[in-house]
Length: 640
Image (cartoon, rainbow, N blue to C red; front, side, top):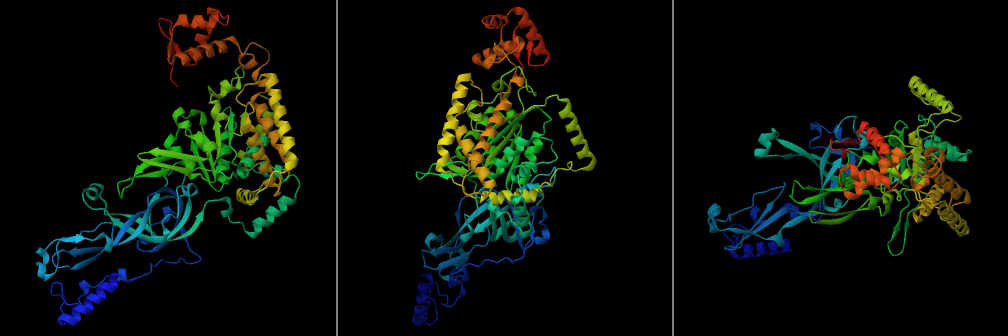
């Protein structure tokens, strides 16, 4: 429309006054009166990267790449809003009607202030006004891309780069997506006091031209013909399930059932989407509890390395916003924007959280929604949104006091909220018990690994992590269904387990609920996926029930927790430990760190304990730096 209007005005001026323009005496053919070339184009140019392109890590991009077309890979950590970016500014003069078009090539520009026509006085002429409807805008979005955890050298901080996408490339990614972007590596000048203070002249950014690859799922794992042939040969061998489980961290001795559970976590069940929009998760959550030195962290590290999208973090080093999402300020617009945390970055993958027991209670509550609804709801700084966090959570925690106390109940040893524990599909307790035969075999295994830097010889060759990743990727493509004939079998089994626990009066943290039933179904689907079967078999349900019983047995082993009556939860508790629990509960109910000696005597008197046992308890736990006894014999708990 502007082009037709300008051509009509030029023709009229040419015919009317012999080549003199009607506005200001400029010739109609003057270039300043014509439209800029960018307004005449009906297309936008993008560069097609070559078929065999060299993918650079962010750490490999140097100053020699400035002005060149490069392809980088990384994970998107921050995504800004889509905003209009001015490409051509249009001004009009109210005095003479002259139109001025200013092409904008950078992030900032100086607007035209005066009309340049001689009729209006040139540089000192009348003021011009910006006409928004005649300007040309293009949508743009700013991303923050960080290098992958596998590309970061040990002990280094991950590097990141700002990516600017325009036009149809907007909305190409969300926090947690792994991208390969092709773009032009450009410098962005830093001027003013900020540049003088920092001693810099420029910082760089990437103007995206094409999205080469968008990796979000296990199906993006490249499976070569050689790998596919090895997977097919393994699938045809007997006991594929056990071979795959023993291929997980073969350098770690034992833990066969734990490794089988971790294999099911890698594969996962099938997610269900109901017609009303409700989603039933298929990801498996596992919590490993145990004494120090039982290789919990090493198992987490190995799972994080095998999973195509694995994020490893520790409980003490992660805050609530570090796990879910943080609100940061956009350097370009000054507005607030979201930056994804560990759980968001692990979308469609696995998030491994070590030292789970050492997290603050306020930070630990951020995981509740992620583990069941698999979303992160944010309402901060005026931003209200919901992010996807479809991830499996693998947590490792130590009992209270560092080691498992066999005289306490499991609930007192774990010291985690029951609402959080019920969200884990499997709670596995790994104890470091003294057994001469087992300790000898473990020592021989460790010495062999240290001497040869390899696992001891097995009856088969374990799969390499890349082959195991490929097998898991193929298994996750299978969507088995649950046959109707197994419905009554699972329902009756669930009812029997509930009845047995009701007769025993078992109210431990591993009490069977409806979530336990869903966990059995998820693990049964994962076992069917490992067989590449279209439907779940009864053997899959039996194996899922076996793993569930083994996990409960690890928490409720009578040999580990003692026998007899007179304890908490129906188990034997020695008087010293019972008095400590009574005083701890008394301080917790009063929300204080100090209780008097008289109140302590009255509290234990209701359990028929005397002052001799109280004095022995005070002396023992004072030596452990749990509390201190003041001069007035008041008991003051020390902060952990």
